[in-house]
Image 1 (cartoon, helix red, strand yellow):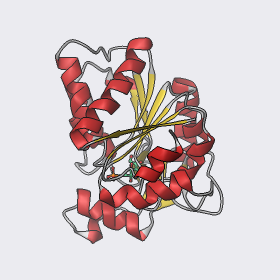
Image 2 (cartoon, rainbow, N blue to C red):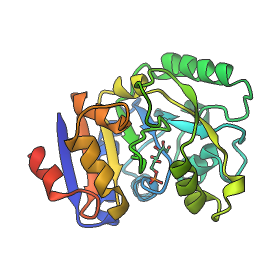
Image 3 (cartoon, helix red, strand yellow):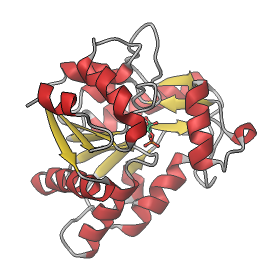
Image 4 (cartoon, rainbow, N blue to C red):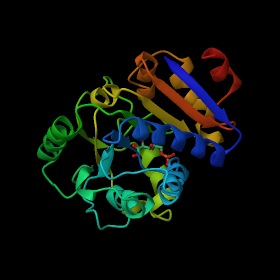
Length: 251
Ligand code: F6R
């Protein structure tokens, strides 16, 4: 089941997304929450911080796990996803950081890094109460890029050229040489185990891929399309990213 929430702009959809995450934590103060990085959820995290500051949200018993991390970057590197999470959310709320999990980008043995993260997900999460996702321009979720098959477990992935370029624009001031080319990412199997999935898409650049993912066939060549098979998905976006056809289909 897919519910579409479309709001006028980025700020409004960020508020709506934060409301859904806050609701999951209010319903279960020990909620397991899956988190994403990237430009899309920055506003959502800012709204969650506001709720915490207003005394409306308590993160003290929440456990989080992130989708991905660049291979080769440590958590103190300012381009790492651990650093992103600390600066955008964790440093500003009362979460116990030892209950926040991100793949270990410093583990050079890719096989070990992936199996270790799967073990953490099994032990500490089991399944998410709510999983926040963005969508890549090529339809990736986490860093599960288009491929012959949906990848079940955590994997080490070589990023697609488009993703490397997108990341250079967002995180590396356009210097392509500095952008890591590999990342560890939670597999699609674990993402699909979540009780609820909140996928966000904002900006005109996402309109076409959202249509492919939610109006087209389910195919590993558009990884996000698998969400059509999940029983509880909210697709949250702004008017630039969510077309009338998508709203119409899931009315
Ligand atoms: C981030 C992640 C990615 C992003 C996607 C969209 O942890 O897993 O799938 O959600 O690349 O990125 P933005 O939001 O920057 O457009």
